[in-house]
Image 1: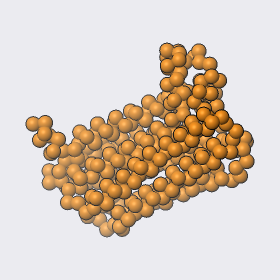
Image 2: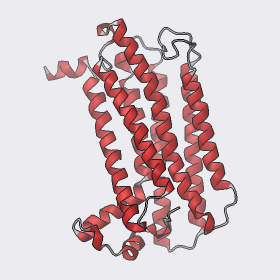
Image 3: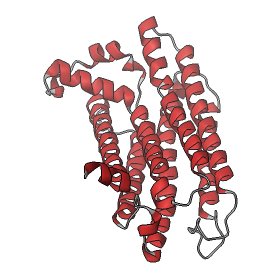
Image 4: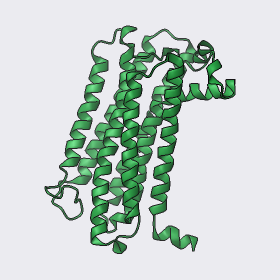
Length: 294
């Protein structure tokens, strides 16, 4: 019975993964905000951006859950026309929330990098990074909104649409480029300041973690190509949805990683009593003394 259930539907897989990943990234953001507040006594601009990313991530998870509720993950032959239409609308909306969530998580890192402008001479580069990220998001959003002809711009199944596979790949490649720019700027920053070898390695590790996001984006491209064309969209596309959720989670978690490590050190050294934390010692241990508030 269990085997039959697993082969007949992917709805539980989508929903469980969806909310498990959202819970994970929510806990990471809570750890980040707790750490930043106890370190600096306030929430900075980059924290506001990561909160915005969380809000859009929740919207994405909620709308995917609605799609699952009407049959997403089931075989196409079992879905009524009205439910299929609802699923298409949900996937249309979720893609917009997904892109927006990614944009704010990237901007959070870009804002963090820009906060070092008073310490090192970096010219206009930090602002250019945010501009490039915003342009990528704007183009991706516009392209996704108008992927099919009005009035049914969400109908990728029977509507008149441009080459969706090519568009998805273009958007993913542009997404990857923004990630490489973030990593590159982070490594330039690390090389531009005077640090001990250990701190430099820690900072390098922090930015190189974004390679996980790039790996997830590449996986999305591979899955998209493998699924096109398909005769069972409500069932076959579950893996693409899960890969989107993983990318979204990784983007937020890696943006919070430095604060997560510090938070875990607080818990380890103080037995959950982080009020007694000696900040300079712990910051030195993880190389987090570079973190500044805006």
